[in-house]
Image (tube, rainbow, N blue to C red):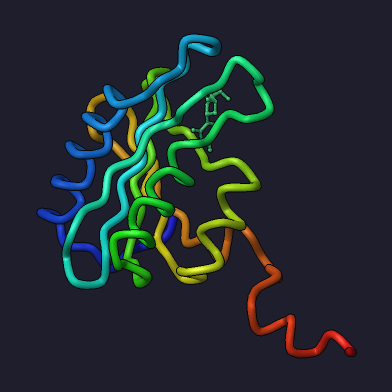
Length: 142
Ligand code: THU
């Protein structure tokens, strides 16, 4: 866990919104409810939750829901993301979600909240070191 840039109030707000976002989950198959909330650079919050599918491979993670909602409503700059699950323990984003976050926010702070609002925070740079991003495409030969 590293020291983050959010104020205590921002962390408390993010914790509450993230824990609440679990209720938006559609997860009849795994029964594992995940909430993810993005804090945008301008201080807005964008909620997401996992949306499952009878064709299991089509399940969409909470973090991806939040990113897609945010980007398609005009937000592409983010300070932090909160993640919480019905397990009530610290739930880390899966590998695909780390890559999805990396596209828009390589330095985003990832707050993983437990049931009582306690958290661990890792910068995405730690969770996805030496990551592939848009700038790497420029060195691909034609
Ligand atoms: N899930 C997420 O929403 N985010 C993650 O980073 C890990 C997994 C969801 C996908 C699926 O609906 C359920 O949790 C069980 O894997």
